[in-house]
Image (cartoon, rainbow, N blue to C red; front, top):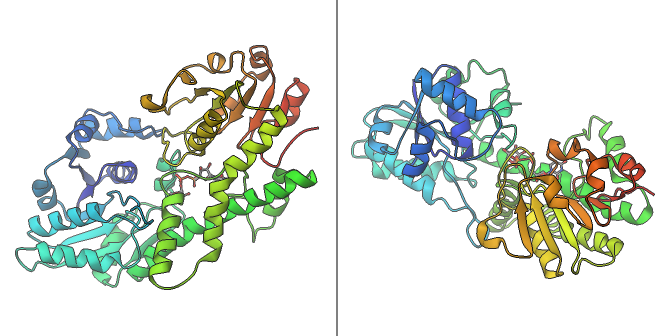
Length: 432
Ligand code: UDX
């Protein structure tokens, strides 16, 4: 089977490389010639550990190549993965224009049976729409199947997640399609869950909604912990020892960001409205997330006295470590609030770059941590890159003016920092 990946963003490139690595012949298709050019030369258009090596290796072996020509790409493939973006519409729904364009290209150019697997996160009942769009674009009534095959990989560990998934969800009512998907995933050791397309679509949203709920739950508790002098990290650790609760996604912080959680929660709330159901818990999850960073920034400002004319270093601006992705990153709201408070903001990140139009005399980005924190009054840690966890905090202290460390991810060793003479304060986590 020749595999075609439509959309060479995050999910598309990772999926393509994993199948190329497993020995399949893979083509990556994208209408953006700049992306195709870059990928064909072995250069990723985003930062993700491990993928660059895999790209070079599979380009060399000929297992993967990239093109902008949909006609050729569709004709030469038997299995097509849809990995195009589904951005939010202004009212919180999902914009399906790229899914539709891809479907119409498949319909227009197919000359024999195709299996189309949807990896993009799409609203409930998108599967039948795709069938209709492909069908309407066809010149001849050639058979095809559309299966929903949601992707659960995380940025920063995309490769590991894609090679070792916890489960493979297949939404399809066609035995032939399910059989082909099983052949394709043969070398991946993960349980299969075969269900209706609509259910598969819902599993993806429900999973992301649940993970976001865990985070907002501890984040809201962290506000109470702050007031009753209890460390939320200890509470979460104790809670997580119960296997019914589990230890994952209980780390309190300045809120979740990224390209999935915020968007998917809005999309699920939108779907609920469309179908006249209320998802009040998710509404609150969203609300807690939207207020979490400003809540703690206010707490930290009270501790510092004021942010006005203080030099504040932001360590880590990406929405999480090991990625350069700034989409919905809490750091952006924090920087904006600090600028509104007349602070002088100095930013560092090992991979992410602030857009140049945001930079000013009061907001600068530096290449080295030492330059960033020079004569600063406080450090705010916004994403927990290893570099910061392993930094020589004793040496860094000497460069600062005042020694406040506000740990927005609750990952630094508060006791050690306090012993070194810092004023450490996390999110519902502090040292006296
Ligand atoms: C998420 C899902 O985990 C993944 O299954 C889905 O396919 C895409 O969305 P991703 O957004 O890449 O993946 O990263 P993830 O590790 O889930 O983190 C999302 C956000 O939650 C980050 O901002 C992270 O800092 C935050 N987070 C995570 C917390 O605040 N606390 C936690 O305990 C865990």
